Length: 182
Image (cartoon, rainbow, N blue to C red; front, side, top):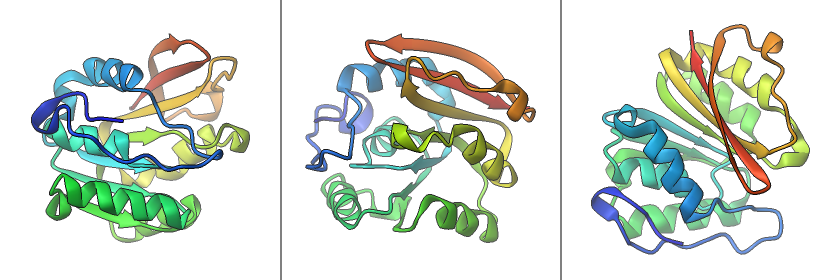
């Protein structure tokens, strides 16, 4: 896997060797960042369920100011830290090894304010609306949530009244939905 754009373009990053972790392809990541375009510049980013950290590392490569990475799995955290070190991004990152609920609690407790959130949980968890609502206190106005899911999954907009649906893109068996905090 590699970084597809920005200052670290073409740099190789490690993947998490696991049947439980789905890495987003370079092609899909490129499309996501083309959609985000300049919104990434100087953004405070959260890569929730980070896996290898590819989304967050791509964001930093393209000009994000800071990225918080979260994953509960020790191996994922090890790979994220190695990738951060390889790209020399230690001063622009925070790595949290906690269950996503505990990580969100920490983010809110520490009054972090976020601009872009990459939300790519294991599909079997089916927690998109709940996570989006829990994140509200940590989101700046106009914050963007990039949610990756199976293409059959439909987000129940009535359950997330603080968000406006922006767009949807389908890539094979998965889709990316974009939401903006009102």
